[in-house]
Length: 262
Image (tube, rainbow, N blue to C red; front, top):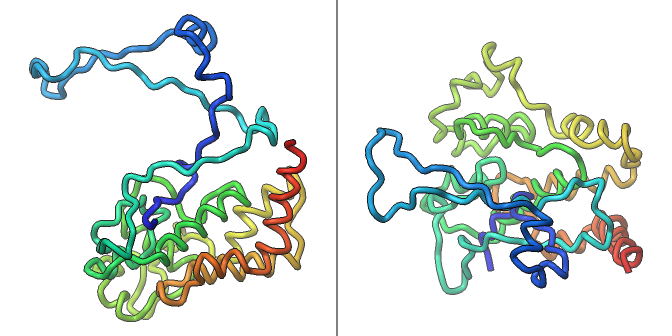
C-alpha cells in the first residue's frame, strides 16, 4: 500500500483493553457527559432538513506524554483513506492530499507524474525527525504552499533547476541566483544541520541527553537521503530499515522498549 499520509497526527495510541467493556453509565462517569454545540449557518438562514440541530463534540481520550508507560505505547497508523496499491492504480501528484509540511515536493512540481513509494519515504523522514526531536523539520502552521517550498530550500539547499524555473512564486523569497531576498532573510528556516541542533539537540540537552556524534552522523545521513528532492534519489523503505542508524540505534532501542514493557 502507498499514500499512507505518514505524519504524527495519524499515529494513534491504542485504547485501554477494558474500554469496550464499559457500560454507557461507566463511560460517562469516567470521561464525562457528551458535549453538544448548536449548528448554525454562516449566513444566518435556517438549516436544511438533512442537517441536525446539534453536533456532539468528539470525546478526548488523549494522554499527556509523561503519563504514558512503555506498556501503553503500541502505536497504530491511521487514516488509510488515501492509500492505494501502485501495482493496480496510478495516482498523480496533483491528487496528493498529504499536508504540505509532510508532502513530497514532486507532488507540487510534477503534478502530472505518478506518485511512487518514494513520496512516502519523504513523509516518513519528516515523521522520524519529529519523533526524535521536539519540532517538525518544516513548519506545520497553515501557510501558503510557496512558504513550505521556500523552507525546503532553506533546509535542504537548491531544488532541481527545472523545478526552480517552474516555481512561479520564487521571487517572493529568493533572487534569481538563489539568495534570499531582504524581505525574506529574517524569516528563513535554519539549514539542515542547524535545524538538527535547534529541533533535536536543544531539547535533548535540556531533558534527556544529546545524540552523540557517531549516531548524529548516521542519523543525519539517512534523513538527508530520505529528503532528496528527486524521488529516484531517495532510499527505499528497505534501505532505511537496513541503514546504520536503524540497525545500531533505532531497532535496538525499540527491542529494549518491548522488553521493558512486558
